[in-house]
Length: 501
Image (cartoon, rainbow, N blue to C red; front, side, top):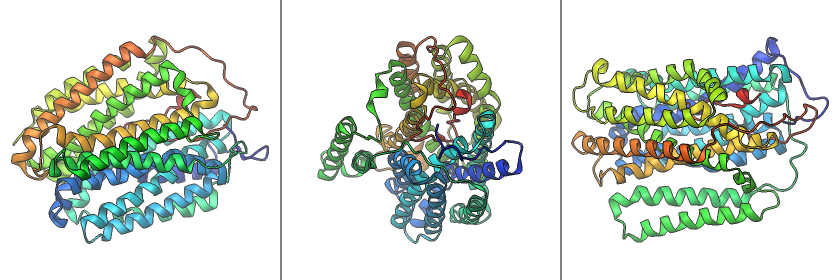
């Protein structure tokens, strides 16, 4: 990675200056991680408060994910060119304003618009957080700093459902957004005082604005078309036009990236079979997970009758197990190669979803919910660290940053499309996500579809993921390596540059 030159800072992990930088980046990333999960808990209350139907609730989730997935690579490029601290601060401030708009939204349409703006802020601050750590810390301490950031930010993501359930129970769903504002102010105050400015002197050429616009149009068209399908029907001009726009936008994005002298996504990295296969596995696995974390907490509240706080806590064992076991799974994959854990993990997760599909009215948490949740946590612990490490390890060191960004964008796009498509594929039709009679059968079908996706991911891993990654010599520390975008993933996507270092 590169910094701003010979005078770039070299913070030490054990010193106060380093701890302040770590605090700002963890809290900033935590904002985006929490808001990726906290809203799911509040959906029934949002639907009742604002009179929102199924499509509107889907967009409450997807509006945020759409703009975040579409712009996250561009956000990394902006930080490289104009200063990572500057873009990070802009993203945090933007996120705070958008959160305030969410909190006061009088209609569901205004809420969705504010969620779209939240995603823009997240796309600006998320890549900057990890890039700041990479650029600011001494090489000997960089892995420690990134590892601490990954673990602490993961804890923040894990708190999302719990925090959301608690706030909804004691007050209102609006507080889940309003609480972001004081945290963002604290992040800005610490960042202004303590984060050093760095940029990439190798970031030359213009920004790939055309690629960013086409990618956003493609994702938006596909998401809107699939979301509108149940209500308007497949023959609707709106549905056909939106899906056509989505396909055209994605095709145009590929063409622009192929021809651009300074692409946001250099397609040459997909020449690596391991990298391509790993990202296909990422897409199907995270599509399944997007459906799981969207529907399970909803089903627990609407069908099973769990209070919001209990529903938020129900999946907490997944994150606890991942925090405890992911590093061990990564070490195991280093010894035996990534193919076996990336095959076995999704199979274990698929078994967990078959059990989760059986959860209906009046279940016992200890007997019916906890066992499949623990099984899901074990499967994800076995899958995620090897998957992420393989995505980075299958390309040259100089492409590690963009490989990280691509893998993250693929995961987010998969979750985005899953939330749009699954209710349609599960047969919900025009039924309401807050109606237990309509949701119960659709939920069971959706869990089985997600289990099928996970099994497909296992098959792809067997065929495409190598038994062992080729060894490669690390580049010297004095050799500047451009980091286009180094980002963290979802709370279920712990990052991996620490493992690489």
